[in-house]
Image (cartoon, rainbow, N blue to C red):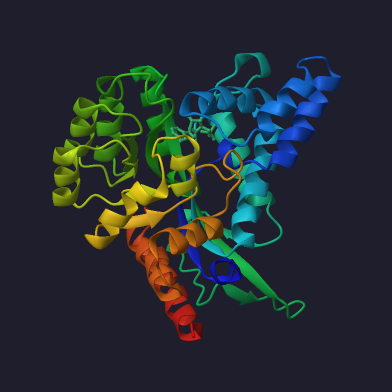
Length: 362
Ligand code: 6MZ
């Protein structure tokens, strides 16, 4: 595990609320339990359960949202999630979240995102580079370990970029509102739009106008695609030519052909796919075929909290399930740099980080 922990890594598919620490969720549940809003023991059992169907996972998200939908809590979770990824040497994190509206506590999609951005600013354990103009201004790092000139200690740095998620339960207008918000927040690191949520809910045509508009305006798009069998939707999603897709679990022959011919990078979340029973076992996981075909792939976590995993853990699983060595996994992590939604300055910085780490590989 240490090998994969110390290796620089790129995380491109992580949902904010799904990445919250269990310990934080339990603490929040205890407080709500004490106030009489929930029955703590019922909730504790749901949070700590390890195997869940895809359907149960979405029920869990509804519970997590009851615990976390508050500005201060969103700020805290964002801070913790970034610190957790940085602590396992993730050097670039694309964090996605669904902006939420909750009139009863005065939360708008915009104030929700402000709380997320506050969380990025609140991180003290590492240097967080998320303001796009920092990069434009030419703030450069040559290594992920920066020397803190004040006390001579090395400080870690992590690039963070944000994707705003459209939940499949949302209307076209709500999806448009999210895209407009993303456009307003580009200067604070919002680089794209994700379509996610329960895959059996909603229609592709509902989200298409917002996704088209986002792309016309220069935002990058990633779609949860093929978490359940739905050939019509999968075909339409691939024809849309998103910049990346997530999962690609329930594809048929025709869809694999299309994916490969369009060369669309796939965010692979091994533990999530197995835990939700979307893929029956790693022996039949599509990672192996796509890897052999040299298809662009990125190992990701999906929801480190919900699935009790880590990015290093996902690398370790890939190593043992698919017989890959340290160098092959390093190369996989390095290739991910080419699929980030950040600009070329960030990419070239990340390439340098991997170049210098490559020299330390034995
Ligand atoms: C589809 C998922 C997901 O946005 O509140 N989400 N959508 N498939 C998955 N794989 C199992 N995992 C997470 O984070 C939680 C939300 O992300 C989406 C769901 O909409 C979930 O409610 P945020 O930060």
